[in-house]
Length: 466
Image (cartoon, rainbow, N blue to C red):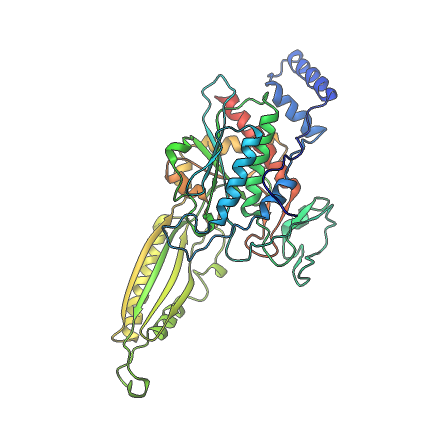
């Protein structure tokens, strides 16, 4: 389905007269029995949860966004942001949508970063909240010509993707599917990723914006919207103007399981190993030639086989992971990423690089070795722990939305990792995305709707508790 320009999507359902009467009666009961009387919309939200679940315009928005080809490019020069200009096309579309909704200051800057504000309607000095998602998709799988499919009322069995029947989602391979029977599961067609990471987050934030524009009675402080580029290649906030953003607490909408808030990430560095060999004609190389390519292979193989790798670690264990190797006899380069929940653990792992370098140097006399280390991001827990309300209010919001809430850690990073160290404490909230970066990526429509409900409750909690 093609898309040109901005199409006004159906408005979110307004409250019926019946619901209004129920609201009035419930408020009276609360007062009569001495129960703490919450503002109008709190009671309305609870009634919606119990009787008429609120409807958010998620699916149509999500389908539109995933059809934009926004794959980022890790091979682009480090100073090119965004790494692919196609990301700006989605950014401009989002600005057009926001302006049509009445969000007057929505803008896309020269770097492709989108900013917008939903102004406060409270008389209190409520903290400014920022909701953030990224527009790019992972280069691990194609994001071009995505064809999203809704598998309505999922029956609990296997899901075969039509454009490549070898791609089957099974409850054994995807255990989270076991909890989704009866829900509407969205996948791609089998030849591309879906893009739920993180266009589901964009759809959630945009649905929130539309709802708030249609329901000015919902009390809230200033809400800042931020859409970034190049998160998948570690450059997501490289061009974010923090002074322009001007927020107090942020939330990335880039998480997986229903009811999860993540307040802890890896600390991360990249390591590059440069090896320089000695070139001689192979026919006359005896005692002279030193192959950088062979030394690089030996370097990779020198690491333990039963620990410290992504495939042998879980939970709170860190790892060392070679992501690319290229070279010739004369010179070779190995790119690594190293991860640990404890920043000092990165130092321990880097010390291993130095020990292995010495070992390889002894195996290949005459070989030159240089090792470069670059910081990528740090565990956001070290910042967020000083802002307990950021997590506590989110857990309370999920509880009010009827969701079983829990804290988890990310075995990876988000834009929030770096935003936290740039002055914006920024945990990560669920949207329902699963099996990200691959052709079997999927998401529950109902989980996205519950993510919007969570945000609605969250903004009111901050207003209520100020």
